[in-house]
Length: 295
Image 1 (cartoon, rainbow, N blue to C red):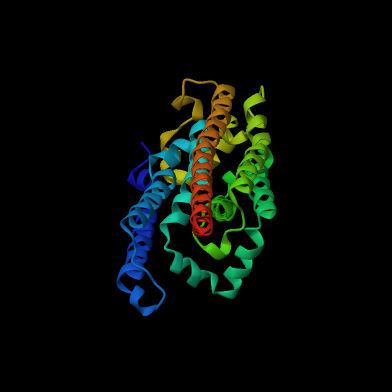
Image 2 (spheres, one colour):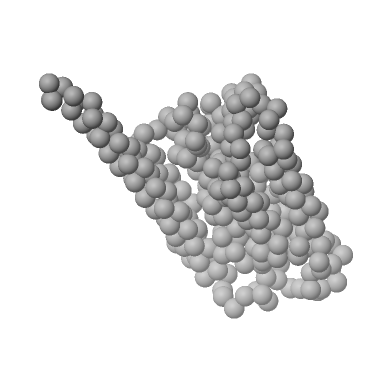
């Protein structure tokens, strides 16, 4: 119905393929240029590939078109973009590559400022909530450059938000186990208002999905004006059996559920890592005390 180019975004796929090839060349073939480089591990290689595949699935596959038809698909798309992909991406990039990037003054300044825990939480959740204000959401969705730009900015600030939790650089470990737990709880609380606004609204908030004229403009940008005009579609209700309100509420619920599951997994990882380090420190102290006890 919408055509191969709109459904599968071949140019976007080509771009991600080039990025992936360059990443593997840089981290495998050209790493010997740098004295402090370490081999790309199998785990890192797989995780980077997964992150690129997920970016393509949510932004280049038919799922992206579905996100313009059903709000709940859009929320799955957003949750994947800011909650799933960034931590995978951070872990997949070798430590020595991060150090090289952070040696660039501008990048170092941005990371130093925006990865401060309080600032990272406020900026990420502020931009995420701002995006889902109905007037802002409809404006962004009707402009292809605003949509692409805001998605990129959200992804970047999501990396800043995840950085204090999972980065592997010892010199950037600003949070210990207990502080990481508090950070996660604060993040979960701050993201709740945006979800609650969507879940508990008793009317459709977004003209992108309820106003045929606005929806038509958004879809024309997504699939191309010529393709869309030839289809003579009246509105998104043709593609879903749910009412607009139920579609909207399901989107808010899915976003919150995905957030809770992901944060729960990270929380378990943080807890067990904290427990393991505590046990290692206790064992080390016992070993240090044993010689004096023997004497």
